[in-house]
Length: 134
Length: 146
View (tube, helix red, strand yellow):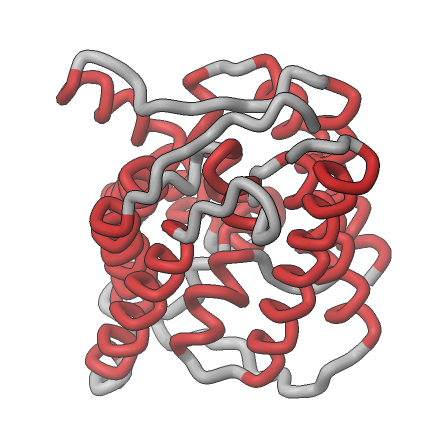
C-alpha cells in the first residue's frame, strides 16, 4: 500500500509540475526575470499549491495519525540560522542559473534533454555534499 | 544565458498545476504524515527507515511525463539550457543549497508556507531574491539581453 500510494502521490505531483510549467526551465527563468521577459505564471503555481495544502493539512491533522504510518512527523525547528540562509542563497543562485529546482528536475528526466541529464546527477552529488556540510 | 526563450502567460494551467501539487502534498501528509519536500524525500530515499514510499514517490515523479505522453501523444513544451558546464554547476548548487537549507521550493515553499512556518518564509524570500538576482546578472549585466 505504501508503495502504491507513494507512487500515486509522486505521479500527481509530477503531472502538476508539467501542467503548471514548473518543469520547463524557460518558464521558470522568465518568471525570475522581473526586469526582462517577465512571465508571472508561476506565482499562480505557488498560490494554488500552498492554499490547497493549507486547507488539506488542517483536514489531515484532525486525525490522530496518518493513514499508512504510526505518526505525523512535521518539522519543528523555528530558528533562523546560518545553514538555512546560506543554503537558501546557494539554492537560489543554482535555480537562477539552470531553471530547475529538485522536483521538476526529476520529472524532466525522461524527456532526456542533455542539460537535464547533466543537472540531475550533479544535484544528487550536491545533496550528498550539502548533508555533510550541515 | 542567451538566447532568451519567450514564454506565454498561462495563469489557468499554472493554477491547475499548483492545485495538483498541493493535492499531492496533502496526500503525503494524510497518508505518510510527512512534508512533501522533494529534497527531503530524495535524501531519505537513500538513508531513511521509510525508504519504500520515498523511492515510489520519486518513481511517480519520473513517470509523470510518460503518462502525459500516453494521454496526449507528446511531451509538454520544454526548453533546457544546452550549456552543460552551466547545468552541472546549477545542479551542484541546487543540491547542496537545498540539503544545507533543509528544503527547496516544495518543502519550504509549498509545504512550509501552508504550515505558516516563519523559517520557511525566510528561506523562500532568500532563495527567490537570490534566484531573481542571478537571472538579472546573467541576462542583463553579463548577457546584455533586452
